[in-house]
Image 1: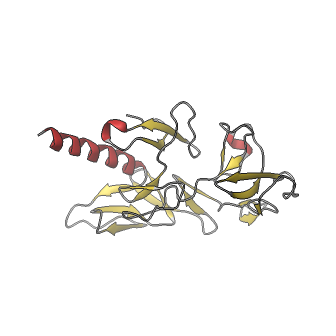
Image 2 (image 1 turned 90 degrees about the vertical axis):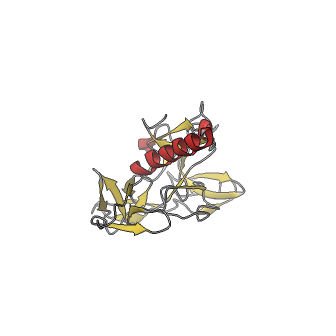
Image 3 (image 1 turned 30 degrees about the vertical axis):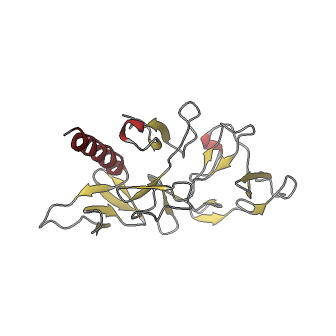
Length: 209
């Protein structure tokens, strides 16, 4: 009975997270809503890869945008231009390995993680960064960074290799964040789900248990 209760509780946690990431239970006889598809392996309707959850349904992103977690944003390395279209930004996201290799201001900071570097800009707050980036203010030198895979649709092991490496209810989420650091994607918070056997996760702000 105790194990059954634990499994049910863990399932509730997964569904709570997934509900914000656009997963909803499927009822036989009902079709998924607009811009949604049915995931057989999960038994739920999820937003299409180019749509986000809004008010219990799904809304498509603009043709030049991609889904980044819970929002539509320009792809990494791009930002909106004067015509409100995503366009490449000179220097942003260019490969680098050491200081001095990034020469396009303001993206003249080389951020190296796990041996892989890319040109970006320093920051003080999230709004200093493009929409798909977060200001990593927990680093010795705060800089704008992304979290690969965050919010992507998945089944089982498809999140492996991403920063968002755990698949929960059809979406990749960031696992292993530090509670007192809050090293998470933009508009999310580090929460403790260790009671449910999954450690810490980055979830939408205000969704901590």
